[in-house]
Length: 118
Image (cartoon, helix red, strand yellow):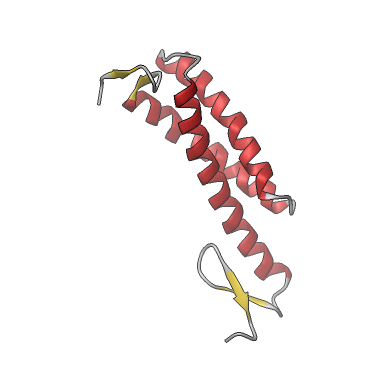
């Protein structure tokens, strides 16, 4: 776990610490922000890409990793996009039920359904 991986640009522990401790909460908030203004989920993916670039810098500056590691950037972008899209969907579900309570009810943390459907 403390072995340097060139394609990751750092050790697994350092990569996951900066990703989980800094970038993932920011991606969650980005997804919420995009959803709360009724914007497209693709904007959350774009913001996740920007956060992946910020993650590469944080990994470089705080943990001594490589600044330019394309595979690490791609992995971070994929993880952060998944987090941002999950947050977007959860927020959108809450907003749909709050905005249209006569039409929809919650159907789990990420979905809603028609009230007429049962």
